[in-house]
Length: 454
Image 1 (cartoon, rainbow, N blue to C red):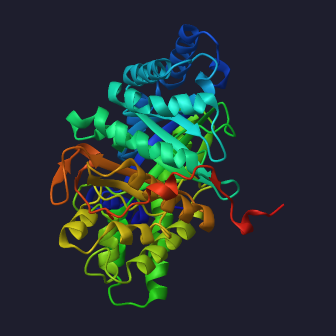
Image 2: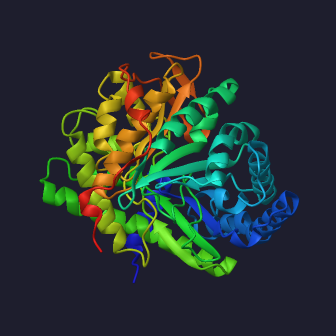
C-alpha cells in the first residue's frame, strides 16, 4: 500500500526535482504493409500508423493531467524501414519518400518524433539495407520528426566494418546536407552495437521484429531526484550510497510502471517495458553529471568518474527491476554532452575529453551521445570512433552507441545551439591521427570467443 508520506514524497520529486515520464512510445509493426508498389506501400504505412496512433497524444495528455505526472514526449517507433521498403524502393529517392510519409503521419497524429528509419546490418547488408543507409542524409534533410538508426554489430556476430566505414561517410554527408541548421540532422542519427528491440528513446527507437503487432513502451527519467537523494547521504560510506540510489530508482520506476499500465489500458495496446534510464535535459538540476559531482567528484571526468558512473548505473538497474514487471530498452544512466548542463560544464572546464567519455561508456547504459565535433573531421576518423565504441559493446555484451555531430563550419572552442531537449554543446577536440587504412580494410571483425554459448 502507498502511504501519505510516499504520496507527498512523489509530489516533491515532480514539482522540485524534475521527475518526469520522458516518453510514451507506441511501437507499430509495419510488416503487413510490405508491397512492391511504392504508392500502395506509402498509403498502407500512413493508414496503419494513423489508425494506431491517432489517440496517443490525447491519451498521454489525459494521463498527465489526471495523475499530475509530466509526460514530456509522445513518440512512435516502427519496424526498420529497410525491411519494409525493400520490395518497392529502387533508389535513394524512393526510400527518402518513405521518410517523408513517416514525417507527415507523425505530424498529423501530433507526436514529436518517429523512429525506425533504420537498418540492421551487424553481419552484412542487403541491397535494401545499403540503399536505405545511403538515403539517410537526404531523408533527414527533408524531414523534421524522423529519426534514423543503424545496428552495426553484436556480441554474437561481431562488427560489420563495411557498415562502420559507410556510416562514417553517411554521418559526414548528413552534416553537410543539414549544415544550415548547424548539422542538426546528425542529432537524429545514431549507430548501435547490440541494439535493443524495445528502446523507447530517440534517436535509436525502432519496433523490433520480435515484438508484438503494437506495444507501449515507457521511458522514465529522474536525475534530479537521484541527485537530491544522494545529497542527503553526503559523506556516508558506499553501502549507504548504493542503498539510497537503489531505493530512489525503485520509486522513480514505479511512476513509469503506473503510466505504462494506464496507457496500455486506455489505448488497448499491450504493455511492453519500462526503460528506467536516467536521461538528463539541459534544465538546471536535471543532470547525470551533477549526480557524479554529488558523490564527491569536482567535475564529471575527474579521476574516479568511471567508478562513480558504474556504481550509479548498477544501482539504478537493481532498484528499477524490482519496481516493474518488465524492464527493458537501455535502462541505466545516459551521458550525453549537449543534453546535460553538468557535462557541458565539465567539457568547458577541461575536465572531460572524448577519450574519457569513451572510457565511461564501458559502464553507462548507451555510449558516446550528442557530442559535437569539428566539421572538418574526416569520415574515416568518425568511422574509427564508431569502431572503438562498437568494440566496447561487442566485448562487454552491452548496448553501445555513437551519436556524434560534425558541425560544418565550426571548430574546437566554438559552441553549437540545438535548442529544446537537445540543448547546446561545445565543439570537442578529436584525435587528429589517421585510422584510414584500418577502417578501409573491409569485412567483419569476428565475434569474441565468449560469444559461443550454444
